[in-house]
Image 1 (cartoon, rainbow, N blue to C red):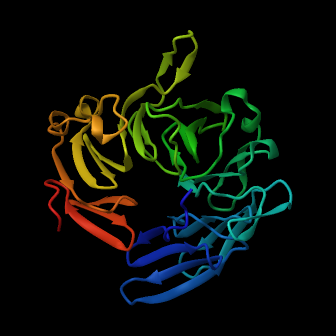
Image 2: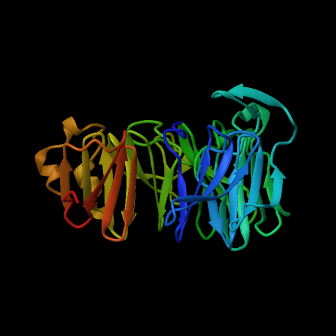
Length: 329
């Protein structure tokens, strides 16, 4: 997990919100004035971006707490302890709860969703609470013991569809839960290049995109039968080797690798990527299916689409590209 390569931000107007895992702080910075508006404190590192919704800021931290702060001044609205007890461990240079909150907080329809825990044998938790006051809606504390849910590690930004909560699971595949009840639905199968999980995923319609070193697209609610006759969720639609991040805009898929950034239509992805796990097996004819491809870049660590511009980040560098042509801006 590479949570601490840089600060993850949330932006509302000119206000920029981020967590400093080195300082156990939450910042709000006025980007227009280049000044700090307020600072709030957690009792252990908060490693993901805050969620800003309805004038409030929601933060999950390694102390096992979820904080709801007033976006105007950083004052505490409510705090919920997601850990079942006060046990602490040493990890990543700090003392943390045995049940850290490393899923971020999803807020939608007046409800906040988040997960807690890292170790299945110590218990894993998924919560839904009222976003206004933190009062409980439901809790799933049993999915760590579900045989089909084994090896889930709640790490990475949660996603919410109309009916599901999707949980990235660190080094293994994402898990899917019923949004109304919290019941465990399924854990997705392996991509074509193996268990490449990751701490983030992208949801677009019925497609779920996930993976590090190989982005895989799943039809995440469909079922399929393996060669032994067992049924599973999430057949692989396509998998593209060596890709690090993906952005989906309508039918256009943008991806970035250690050396390339490119755009391709969704319905061309499987033909172009095939079962390849590396670019050495992708021919020029396959690459020709891309709308555009810009080579020789070194920005594999982040990919954002804003308007008609793609922003990509790497070590000490941010680059911008025309989303229609791939030309560097």
